[in-house]
Length: 405
Figure 1 (spheres, rainbow, N blue to C red):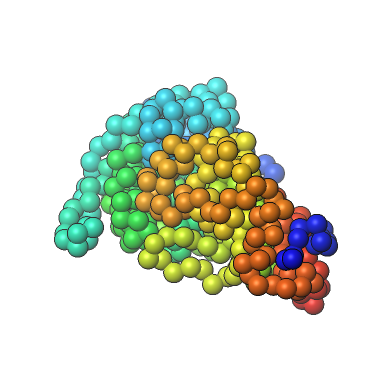
Figure 2 (cartoon, rainbow, N blue to C red):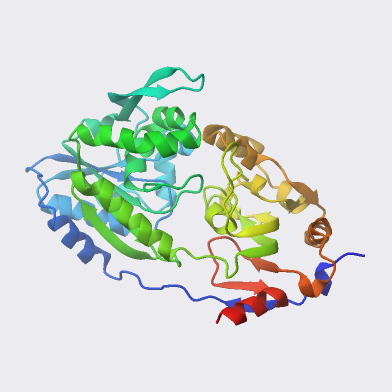
């Protein structure tokens, strides 16, 4: 017989997270930059970074930084700082910025896009894949290097592939973003070791060039609104980023319980997370040689569909145990496999068991868990791993939530 989806009683719940956010971004950004007393001379060419992620009101943020630099006498310009994204072409990276609402017109400064890089240093005595020693070159976007100064602007948040004091943020953008395709591939070929062990030393090498004049860190709340913006002098970036990462982790949304039999995810995609489903939410990494997270512990994950925005890129599908024919029929295998090979985390692109529809996927998942009674089943249904303020839960989960309140 087994437990069938139609027999499950679902209870809709709402979670409340911190919804504080900055309303007047321009005022805050001006105040933060003014506090640094930036060494910008009249006519100095200042490069400002722009990444590929959809950050809350990012055109407004960049326009404010640009306006302040102009006010201080500088001549600002934007540089796409997104590693190999956009098909690893200058035109592709400009296109990504345009999709985010970032154009010369919206921010008030030219965009200089190039994949050309300049070598600035080496990271010495790096273990290579053959356990020998090699020198890892440290490179930087040529347009940025030729500027009189660089302001690095990025969101600070937990990474989906590793945990450390520094994860996704200003220092990663200095290395992977500004290093374009060459440096993105160089560091990713070491897998998580490259990100955990080499990212910060490489960022320090970039700082030693003296080209970075400021870092601006952005922290979003659980509803993807800007909660905090902080500007740092170069020497304060590393410690400042550590502090902002702690705030970001505290603000992250999460599932209401730590142990589940089944999690149903309606949509996955690159617009939701770099891994389609945020690994910090579902508690799975799927990286060879890396231990899995302790919490949350989820027996089976079912993912039902791809978001339209992901355009067929199903990287992260391997984090699930079951999926549907509807999802699989939409996969762009070239985009998915390219993403997996570039990241080196190929397990995340493996297709899970494919069911004909949601009902069959649920029945198979329940059958493999050995849960006999529907009243005992601990399951949650979410829209995606970004939107966790509303969800559907089974009575067993609801009772646990009630016991905590």
